[in-house]
Amino acid sequence: MSKHALDFAFAMLLCVACIFLWFVADGFRGSPRYAQIDTDFWPKIVTGVAAVLTGIIAAQNAYAWWQERRLSQVGETITMDWARIGRMAAMGGLVLLYFFTFDRVGFLLATVAFLWVAAFSLHGGRIMTKIIFAPVFTIALTALFTKVLGLPVPRGDGVFYQFSLMFY
Image: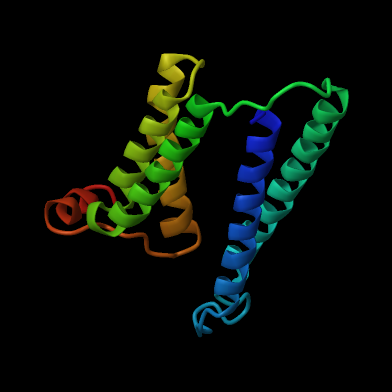
C-alpha cells in the first residue's frame, strides 16, 4: 500500500474522531462559572479546527494517491509497507496508553513521557530539541489550563499526586 493511501486513511480516521469528539463536547453540561462562553466552547474549537485540518490533509493525500495510481503502470502490484503500518499502530497504541494512564499518573508526567516517547520514535530532528520540547510544552500547557483558563488538570494518584503538588 502506498504512503499516500496510508496517510489518507489515517487522516480520515482522525477527522472522523474529531467530528465524534465535537458531538461529545456538545453534550457537556453547562457551568455557572463559564456561563459567558459555555463549557463546550474550547473543546469545540479544538476539535473543529482539528477536523478541518485533518480533512484538508486527507484531501491532499487522496489527490496525491489518485495521481500516483493514475501515473503508475497497469501491471504494477501494490505492496503493503508493513514497517509504516507498524509505526502507525505503535503510535496509536501510545495514544491509547496515554489516555488510560492520564488520570493515574497525572497530566505533568503523562504528557512529558508521551511527548518524549513520541519524539524519539520519529526519525530526524535534534536530540536537544526533543529533550527540551516536552517539559517546556507541558509546563506552558499546564499554565494555560490552570492559571489562564482556571481549569483543573489531573494530578494523579498517590505518589504522583504528591509530585504534582510540587508544581501546581
